[in-house]
Length: 115
Length: 110
Image (cartoon, rainbow over all chains, first blue to last red):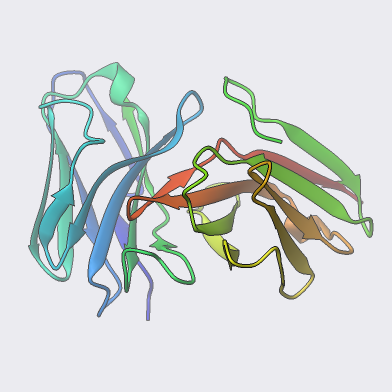
């Protein structure tokens, strides 16, 4: 298995533009998680899905952020409009269970820079 | 140990020495804990886990200790190698979600 695949690896965009981050989870994993990592706040859970359904989006910072999972093999995290404070590394992770026995498997992340 | 702020706590050890990385968790009801390793430019990678009904678990060169009385978790790495240089996070399961600590940067001197 290729693991969790995220794209793009790096994204530089201007303030006000729309940004879409993509994730392909491991086949067969029913849970998908989006995390954001910054030096100030560490790794924060934004939202997670079970069987393509959003379960908990309490970590989504504001209405500018939205996430979808149209099928079991694809999820997107969208920021519209983007702001400089959104600059961070965004990770997608997947797991067989919500309890994450043996942990969640993380992708390599998307480094977002908003200028 | 863990701290909140701009700078990660750093542990510097000599190659071949043992390393101990500490973590204080927040919720006494948490019943599952994981240690992750994150190398530069990569996502966190699972190292070892432990459930709250245990106080020690051993893996290959790593041992996790859990002290529920003081809500403390530690990761011991035996015979630390340059490839162990990374940021180490503890994570606790709360309400079905993994909540991560701030991390400790381990630097191994050759």
